[in-house]
Amino acid sequence: MAAARTPQGATGAGGIRGSSRGGGSGRFGGSVRAVGRALHFPVTGTARGIRKATHAHGAGESGLGKLIELHAVNGAGDVMVTVALASTVFFSVPTDEARGRVALYLAITMAPFTVLAPVIGPLLDRLPHGRRAAMAGSMLARALLALIIAGAVAGGSLELYPAALGVLVASKAYGVVRSAVVPRLLPPKFSLVKANSRVTLGGLLATGVAAPIGAGLHAIGPRWPLYGAFVIYVWGMFLSFTLAPKVDSAKGEDTALLAADEQHLHGPHIRPVKKPGLRTVGIAVTHALGANAALRWLSGFLTFFLAFLLREHPLTGQSAAVSLGLVAVSAGAGNALGTAVGAWLRQRAPEIIVVTVLPIVLGVAITAAIFFGAFLVACLAAFAGFSQALAKLALDALIQRDVPETVRPSAFARSETMLQMAWVLGGAIGIVMPLNGPAGLTLAAAVIALGWLTTVRGLLGSARHGGAAKPRVA
Image 1 (cartoon, rainbow, N blue to C red):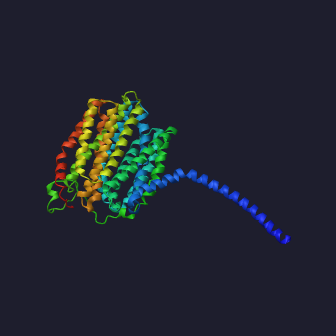
Image 2 (image 1 turned 90 degrees about the vertical axis):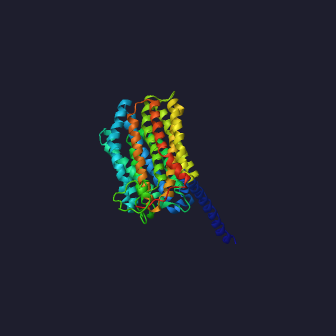
Image 3 (image 1 turned 30 degrees about the vertical axis):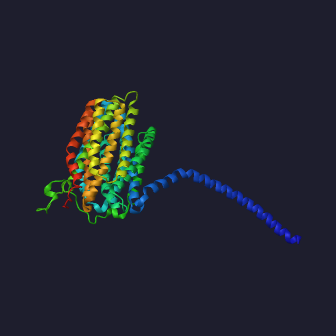
């Protein structure tokens, strides 16, 4: 019995010792895994949270979630390039020389863009089956151009300007294609306004996160934000091809003509239209587009005018950097709030929304021009961002309501091109404007007043009649 018990005891002891070692190893391994999970959680937890937010309410199944993520990547890359260019062209030299540099930048980049912008929309209309490739090509082009700009920043060569033009054109081409893609990815019972709100908010949040990261990279060296942009754009290139295949489908689509004259709204066309112009989408859409163009002009004007004005004459008690940061944060917060409010309002009386936001901005601009000061300048930036976001979403709602589905992607592409041209024009005037705060804001108020007075009657008439007559497809 003793002999029989001995092996059992030995086995038991060995088993106990083995269990003790295994338990210790298991506890150690469990601790390592727990530490690993704790270290990875900020990344994986954030990624899961972002994915859950972007894919909610059917956006994941329809493919809209992927587009939101792609637009966030696009915004992060663009802000990295902006940080690098601003530090090189704007902050590194005295104000007078900076105005000359920015004027040269405008002449070499944005001026040619005003010629190219009208071509981008129609050109991309001809490539409806290659939208994913077009978006990926835009990302790849900007990635390579970011490396060229990095070399130009270090050497101070003129390659900076044509490369910056290429980045600008590629970015706007992405914007045009993205506007045409959104209607293809709408989840069931999802309004276009809500979809565009989500996409825009994704871009704004990514921009807010990437801007301080870009500033930190610039502290290491002027090239580093551009290296960061290169990595982000390459990521965006691969992400473009993960969009749903239906993005490349042009089944049932036609070309939109964005104007609202009676000749094109009614009756069959006696002669076919050879060159599509801006016609046949309805009176409400064209008037809302005009109002949005005024607000986009204001955005471009304030961007450049206040940048130079606040650098030369900072807000009371603040440095130039703090003054510019205050205005930029105000504009960004206003834009985000306008996007959120637009998503909440959905498609409720879009004409009334456009008619209402313009006089609000006009009143703030007039007040800021008369009582020029830090608080009112920040308020104007915030209201301009708020109104621009809200009016753009109202325009999207009108396009969804009044434009036939077959031409809707084309209408979005062409309207976005026009708005980009308005921004460029505003920026050009903001650069050449004398650095006089009240005078500059008075001009801004005059342009907003003109945009409102020329569109209010048509928008109110459309709202009164419950929308424009259904346009014909050319």
